[in-house]
Length: 188
Image 1 (tube, rainbow, N blue to C red):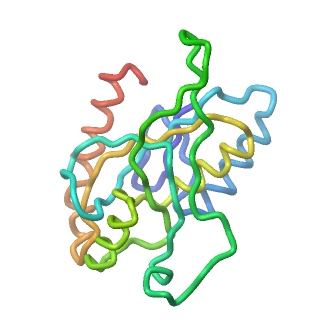
Image 2 (cartoon, rainbow, N blue to C red):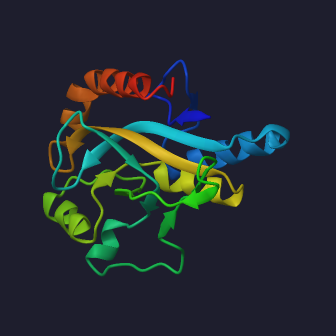
């Protein structure tokens, strides 16, 4: 099953589930509860990402690890008792007859977009390369339903003061690159 956030990221082959952590959590949970008799083996979340420090605009990234690290915690202005990182349920490889972990890039999710380059670099120092608003919620919901999940993303911008303008400028071309990548991989 392929899903996306929606709004600007609508694809004719993906179910839009909502922008941000809350809407994604609610709508994906509701969808899976309503379709319990026919749950997918895997959820593939597709969308755009911002780059914290390195990488190339329009490159495609894949991940099975997400976190919810809030910027205020980087400045020692907050803490949380909640789980802040999640790894997707491992993929079962039928050919090897075993569960196979995947090496993966780490994505941070928040309802906010990082626009301070220094804080973006701090997130990179913690091992996070990408920022996407929904991915942590996708993995958390998939874990509760014991469904494997992964994200396939296209970079639209760096997380800096120009993040929004660059996202807008690059978004259409990025969507085309993502669609082409999914076709090449025979996922659509």
